[in-house]
Amino acid sequence: MSLCVPDDLVLLTGTSLDTEILQAIIDQSDRQISARLAVMGISTPSSDTTLESASLNLSMAGVFIRLKADGSKASTVKVGDISITDTIDNTVSNLEQVAYSAIDSYAKTHGSEKQYRNYIRKVNG
Image: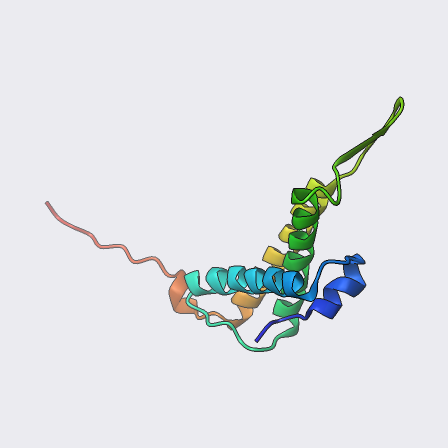
């Protein structure tokens, strides 16, 4: 089950991408969340507001990456002598940073203390 839905992405980004494409972007975002949590030994719940927010942010970043990749949203537009540069890369970076912070925050409140312990073995020799 997805942590967010395509309608959320349409409302937040104004994109006109097909629902199938948006769902694929959401699925990829959810896989990234699950993989990050799995490294920490935490399973992904079917619903959590913190992770839903992270999924939306990663999905919005995915939409912007897709629009840049297919040429729908150029980084720079030049008309005559005027050049306008968009900050898609900065926007994507900021969205990802917010998402990863939310995931790490979730992990801190739902992870076990054991996984953060370091074990040291003394060897005489």
